[in-house]
Image 1 (tube, rainbow, N blue to C red):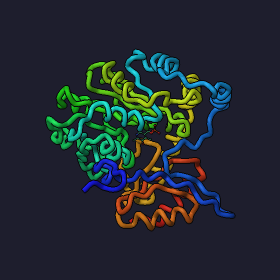
Image 2 (image 1 turned 30 degrees about the vertical axis):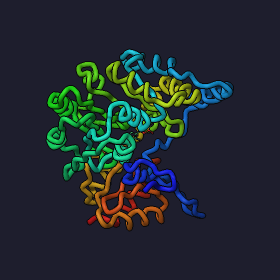
Image 3 (image 1 turned 60 degrees about the horizontal axis):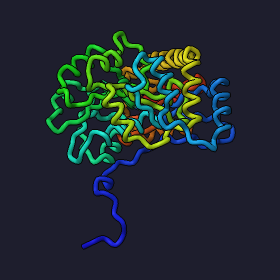
Length: 358
Ligand SMILES: *Cc1c(COP(=O)(O)O)cnc(C)c1O
């Protein structure tokens, strides 16, 4: 029988909801901090705000749909051609466009799990089939199992490095060996949302892999290290045919003129912004060392966050954190992700965590 109301595609019924990090509820007498969305605790630089104000003077006009200045600026910064770039409203949007461009119904997308919660959503929206591969006991990608999960239906493999929410990063050697195993028709996406925070000995040199392999792409964002989460800018760097296909699927005029201007101003202030990343990495070391001293053994934290594998204690820990003044991101019955924030916020976490060591 025909339904009497409009029915969305069946695939949408199974889509898990994206759970945004909650903001803190203001409480009299308690300083509250948002450590639930892996945001940068530093406010925008003055020069970036000036660029935003200047761009705002032309809000009656559409933005440059081709993102020409943005792509030229990025291309110069990265040493790739502008036609190898596809900007979008955050790298999540770029990923959705890539899936829309390459997946037919029934095509498979292999990704680690637990990993970034947007993956199964974007895959289902594209009509493709999610093939989750469990992370190891230390929260790392199981690359051997992921390679084994590739079939002739696989269109895309997503590697999240460092992995959100568990934290470990893949090395260049590991990723290069993985790419060598994957058939050429499969796109390997390196989701590098937190690349600026990685401090392992052999970090992925994604643009080298992009240059060597027409099926490898890097996805990056200005939301985390560059502190522009509210403006929504990210991009793909890859071979020209892939970048062109992603641009073809992008929302027309998606990246606003304000976002384009702020991103260019941020590229110009890169050194200053990366100094801030250095401070966050130093805070991460302080937090990780102190937690280890308390008796925690956490997965290797290579992003701007730490992961507590709390299992059934997850909800209770999140509630206690909120009471102490920090909002964290619980994943029901799995664990809690806590962003490295301002030192005072991290101190609240350390005081709280001391009472929860198993
Ligand atoms: C934050 C994040 C992104 C990018 O988010 P945008 O704000 O859409 O740029 C991409 N991948 C992962 C794993 C992230 O955590």
